[in-house]
Image (cartoon, rainbow, N blue to C red; front, side, top):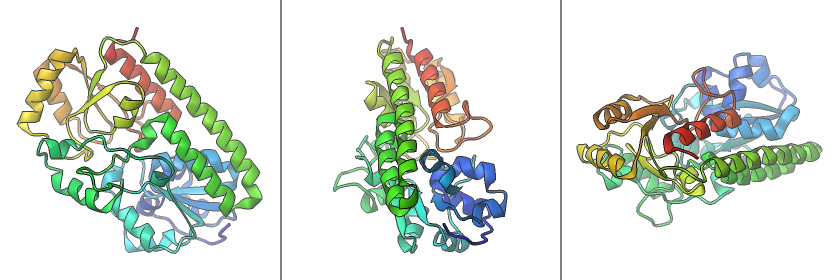
Length: 328
């Protein structure tokens, strides 16, 4: 809808398109593809938002992303130029509380349509491992607790809702309604695309329910606390080495606690992820005699991802969990 020429740098793409990681990787290297367009221009903060915008928008949208493939979204910082460029979009799709720099930039932006995915479903408090175990990310987490969705609770609310297909589908429905309102000429197509996406996510939910219904153990260890919603949805227990901040360092007491729990609960595997160092996970696994594997929090798609898109990577996550938990 905005016909203009915009040169979007890799970083700008990173910041502006939380929802559009995948799209950026495909077209953002071409400045004309990103800026000289008569389509509905959507800036996404990171990949899960990008995927929604692409799936729902279809041929009617031009999606760019603020978070480059391979960049850890929690660490994203925006330049003044990137922040200014967000104002040129028709809509910004983001998830408040995940990326403070993006939250601040959007709050100051004059973009007409601001879509906060966190407002389209219910965020929950899954505990703060950094706080509970005196980890290095405590100060950072406390800042989030004060300014974000925490409603007087002790912890910040967990933003990783996209890893629960059911909650992700709720967000998708809300995004579709926002697109319909902002671009009414294509409302019918947005609705149709959203229904198709809902079927995909419904199938994914069924696969997880069936695949994890009967397992030897319900406990899994992961690098950081990204899988609270997934665990809650499918009756599992996530034990994170780190908390919501993937870069925080666990205390020696936390490591010892996890070693003891692995024996008690029959844990076989320590999961790590592609965008964060696997050093701590592999050290814990070696000391406790456990295996390691990848459980992808889907904060970005890279060449190392075990799937080309959200559904593909989630299917790979399911297989990894089935193996680690001893699915019947």
